[in-house]
Image (cartoon, rainbow, N blue to C red):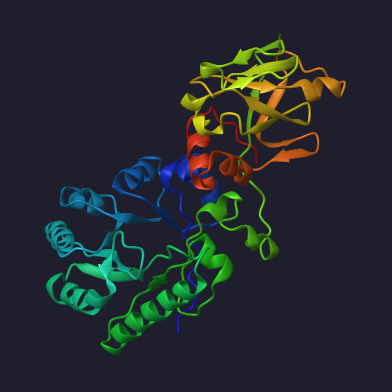
Length: 351
């Protein structure tokens, strides 16, 4: 029923910690014509950077932002009549018609028009908001990685809504729902716009997708050793002495902590790479530093020293630590790790 209109990369949250400006510039070079961001502030930042692409705002914006949305040619998500009327009024004042996308809630329970009210809502927009172009309609999959049956049910119910609207001669240029998990594991000829998020940055939303898609991580996180010392058997390290040496060990101090996005929940659980050897983080993660047991690296004969590189996430001498592993150690998800670590470190980009 629809033909493919391409990809709308999701670059919200500073491109998942990768740097919105740099990622947008790279994607522009690849021919990208549409970006997805969270809110008007992110859209305005892209405009200030000089990007001319279409920009969809996933969040339902406030009435006070209507004029700026129109002035800077952003495409808002509409799921409340109050906002639709504000946009319509501002567009009328500007002598314009503006494109909007309608979000239908088929199971996320967050933003969106309840699916039972969708037909009436869209009909009301068409009748009461002549300055709004109904450009797109979309939904979101909350359990695509855990409940295939529910996700397929969402797709069927959303399809029925789109077909019912078409029967009333209401059609959309863009019909979309395919986030990274949806793109990787769910196919439908209903959708004509893909919106990859985490996948765009080389990270799998689900381990099983490694059998279907090959991705290469974009981000690595590195630091350097600032101090090395011996900890005698029986001595504790860091706040609370949650770790005590069972034998004499050698430790390295690395200048990264929870102020840099290295989560405190990684205390006594995580590993980093030193001289190509996995070395455990010992004691509590502090605001600016972590303590790493590098005894195994010293026993390998590589003798780490001040100034040597340590890899928090990435590859060193054939050994790797993935964002998925870091997330597992922290009892969280890859998204949080990328956003936390990526947004708080100095960045170096390589082509």
